[in-house]
Image (cartoon, helix red, strand yellow):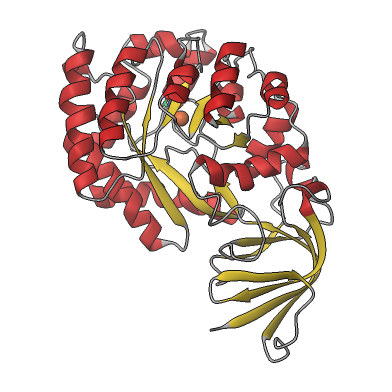
Length: 398
Ligand code: DI6
Ligand code: FE
């Protein structure tokens, strides 16, 4: 098998239990697509290829575990309306918001969706991402939701990243189902899920539990059907209000509950018990000018693992910068830079069920590695608008 040694590094392995950031020094040995060792080369590796990275820092490649990068159109006009005083919820209730992106997404072919999303994916990759989760949720018919996930799968074939797909048909009620959300859940969210699953398009199932979207009962029905198919679950919960979505997600054993600005102590306890990861999305908090931050202190105290993602989407988080998300997680939510980086590596892997595969630099893990022109890992969360990525390895390949 091909052997490669990356030398001269400071290495933030992001493994737990050792030094801060799991710091190590020296080299990383890669065999095939896996990390073989960290530190010093064992004997037998004398003839391996070497790449010198003296003075640089290695981290696990970043993982953006919550995005909506496949969509048509934009929402700049809605941004103007919000600046004139309308709220995100008012716009949604007046038929704008998510539903306006639905019209633009339905109008595009699968090819056009891929073309629209590629620059967004490339922006994530340019900042060190090697794994990205992509949701449906702007099609809201069986065919248009499937079209979105096919586009997402194709993105993963066009670039060296791993794409993880989520079925998010329970994202908004489209105009043709206005007042008939239950029928939508049955006829599109659940029926479509079975069809898309049969095509191998779904890795996880997600929903939006909110006054402007779906009730806990409706989400519960989607989750029941997902469970029958053996699909892992996640949920947009407690973003704009508290409907008990996090506890619902926990009850179903969901891998993550996301957003969580309005999460309370009961929700935290339920998540802890179920091992549900908290995915924080500071870009949406920032862009909607929210004032209530997620209860990071309670999450920390309870030991609920915290991930950080961009939520890249046209309406609430038009942000294709994972490094900016790290910065915002620290400035707005008071995560430490170490917690933020763990949130976009080790814990993000867990939020996708990939903790055995990626998210840390250690023997046996896939060699998804980012090399940065920085001397300390806190720099990754510190600067804004400055990309220090030097090089990246996707399963050991550049
Ligand atoms: N919450 C969000 O922040 C995104 N989806 C969701 O459920 C927003 C999607 C949008 O406004 O287009
Ligand atoms: Fe989202």
